[in-house]
Each structure stands twice: as C-alpha cells, then as structure tokens.
Image (cartoon, helix red, strand yellow):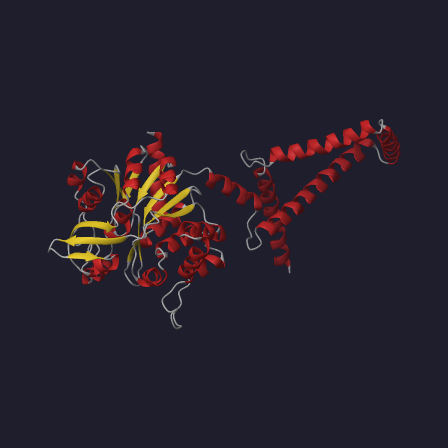
Length: 451
C-alpha cells in the first residue's frame, strides 16, 4: 500500500511539470489559433460594449453597484490581502480546469484512438506542412519504402508512379477491366497513410482464397471500382487519398495505357513488363507502346513546384525508367534547377541488371532520357550485406552493386555514401531502410539548400 501511495505521489510530481510544459506549447508561434482566440475575445468584448451603449449603460451601472457592495462585504469579513489572492487563485484554477477539459474534449473528438496530446498533433501538423516539397519518382516496393520514411519529415510529398505493371493482381485487373494497373499506386497510398489506422491495413489485405478473388488485394479492387465510378484513375486515387488521410499525393505518371518493350542483346524483342524480367536476357534498349505518352498535368505542376526530386529506389527497367519514357516528365525535371538525386539499388536484379555497377545504372537512366543527365548525385549503400545474405542472393544470381567511383565521377555525378540498408537476420533478405534512407536524404536536401 505504501509503495502504491509513493507511486501516486511520484506520478503527480512528474505529471505537473509535464502539464505545464504542454501548456507552454500552446504559445508556440505558427499554430494559427492564438490570433483567432484573441479575435473571439475581442468580439465578446465588443458585443458587451454595444449592449451597454444601446441600453444607455443602465445594466452596467447596476452590475458595478452590486459588485462594489459584494466586494465591500467580502473585504469586511476577510482582509483584502487574503481575499484578493484567493480570488485570483480561484480564477486561475477555473481557467486552467476549463481549458484542460475543453482541449481534452476536442482531442477526444479529433483523435479518438490516440493517447497523445492535441497540441503535439498540431505542432507536428505545422512542421509537416512546412516541410520541403519533394517529388519521388519510381514504383514497386522501393518507392513505397522511401515514402514511408519521408512522410515523417514532410506532408508535401508527391509520388509519381509507373503504370506499366502487367503482372499479378494488377495485370489481371488491367486485362479484365481495362483499367490502369493499381498495384504500385496502392502500395504508395498505404505507405503515405496513417499506418495506425485499420483502413491502411485493409487496403493492403490480400485475399488468399475464393473463386476469382484469390491473389487480389482489397486496395486494388477498391481502386478499380473507384476508377469505374469516378471515370479515371486520377480521381480514384484522389478519393482514396482522402479516405486514408494520405500525407501528400500519389499520381500516375500518365493516364495512357502503356506497355513496355525491350530489345535484348541476343536480338530478342520482349513485350510486357513481367515478360521482360522473365526473359533473363541483357537489356540493350527499352521503350513503350504507345510512344511518347503524355504526362499527367498535375505531375508536371508538382515538379515545377518541387524543392527536391528523388529518383528511385526500385527496379531500374521496370519501375523507374517507365516514368522517364514520358518525355514531358524528363523535360520538366531537366528544366527545374533543384537538387535531384538517384537512389541506387543495393543488389543487382536477375533479368534486369545482371552484373551492373553503379555507373551502369547511371548510363541506363541517361539513355532513357535521351542522354540528358537529370540528377547530379547518386546515393550508394556503403556497407556490404552479411555473408549469409550474400550466399542467399548468389544462389539467385544476384550480387551487390559495385561502386566504380572513377567512372561515376567521369559521368559528372557526385557520390553520397551512407548505410541505408536493413537486413532480415532470419531470411537474410536485404532492403532499403525507410527511416535511414529518409534521414540521409533530408540531411542532403538541407546541405544543398545551404550551399
């Protein structure tokens, strides 16, 4: 029992400074509430003054007389040096109690499932909305990994996503309904959404049984249905973003039904994104049908307003380059003189980048853009995976992407080295770490801004 009482006392002692600290946060600049609170108080004062003038000050006179008599009685019973401080203290307590309860009620209404303070949410919202305008270009799991980290630094994120996927659930929906493939867009929406909500988990749910449903994700079906209802994928994505409370926006690179083709060094011509990787050949040239698809206007607008542009990470030929086969996007990036960085893959991909070095990735991107360099810096992983991971990947004919520094620098690119990798100790699989990757990129943006 004594220990319980001690814990209660300790908690009350620590809780009081915490509450005081939280209240001082309400004085932070930029919250955009103090000015309106002052305006409301001024309005109440003006209403009272107007009523007093209207009634020729009669109510004011009687109220002042009553107050004068009441205060005289109080000071006769209790000396003013005691009654005065007591009344001030009571007023402060009432204000504190009333404001605490009112803010608590607002917090419960706006954040029913969260334990955090409303002021912390407001400060975080202000910080995120003041974050840099970042355009991230890519597709697949690489782009969604990047977005999951970046959303902690800014709410002004635009993800430009490839629509060339023709495999899996996306490919089936594309063939059955004639819609653009929603899979990569779905992953990016889920990555930018509030991950604590059930809606984001529902969006990623994949059916494992059922005639016709097996293999489909709920998000893909939802986006397909929304595209049918709204008329196109752009409106469907916008509606889904509001449902998921997405930080930023996700945009398809084009609304044109695009199919990839690739010429291999052995002379074969392969059509279809999934067929290119399955062909297991070395890619000599890549393009799309139809040629030169138009970009989505909102994508070009986002690039024009961007403070920084990130290309990748992701599969070089099937996730990143398809976006650069849209000439409007290439021209818009080249025109925009802001920091632009390419996040190179950690491992080579069988059927796409067998034996590729960092410079090979850079050259492939330059060729896709008509030999027009779009980025000035390459972010490269600076540590090797474990021996277990290397053995696992070697069995799949995949190896770390070697950094040929001299060649990359001759191509006019700066090299940014950092540990941006996560490794699963159980399976030995290697992935980009969303937190580390975002932290490195944001620091790089800030350095570029200062220089």
